[in-house]
Length: 231
Length: 123
Image 1: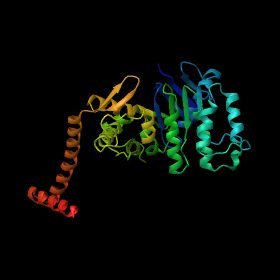
Image 2: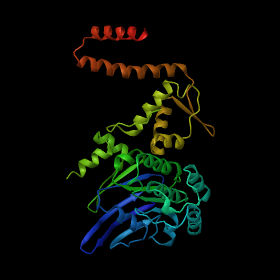
Image 3: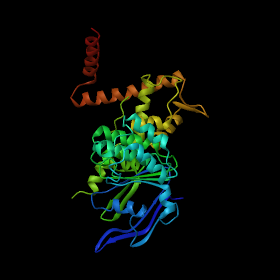
């Protein structure tokens, strides 16, 4: 059964339609790339699943349920902007996550933080941008969630941090979970994806496995994307 | 081991050929136990399902075999490993010959040039 399902899902902001009657069904156990240029509706879709927004019409279902407290408990969500309290250090953050999420595994987070030499008493505001990004990802991936939603997890980090982030995702998601990664940096994530979903102006223009795209078109998903979205 | 992927080919196929090279060159010798799928996928920076598909292909071809509960191993069949080396070297030779033919060299010239190059290299 699909763990993430959209039926004729529509979201309007005033006269702008961000998502226009989309149908999408994603299975557990897969890593899916939500790919599209800026303004194509990626973050809107993720925010609808996280119930930070509600649909204008249509439905979004997580494990068969309308987004609410039950679905929030099974979704581990990494927003596309800073959300950690800057005055907190990583020890306090671990406690915060433990208080909020029953499925948080502190030992897993501690191990990853210490392998990066991030000391528990340093407040977030004193960490570099790349390190903050890693801390946010570590907290997100240290939950035993059914769905991980990562909104632009590699934007603005150096190549070494990007490799670390991708390996952390591969190494830590639950094998029966869905990982949804939104990004416009396709060549960086292509090899970790099972499937690609292309969003364009609020429509899904393609939903296929990465190797199918490579086989059928004889080019990388990144090159194919540039073809589809050529201006 | 190098994990770099060309744009035009499915990633699983490229994993299959990288693994074949690693088996042929002794990175994973006959009878060796392979790391778990997720570990090797992490090292390669690829999706674990894609790595699993590559392993399944290598199992079908007989180069790997699974033992329930204890893991996945490289075949101990020396014939098969010799054939693998022959197949892989055939690919390199085909590529070399086609490049040199495009340069306008005849078969005889290619043979002569290769053996001359080897003799020089040996000194």
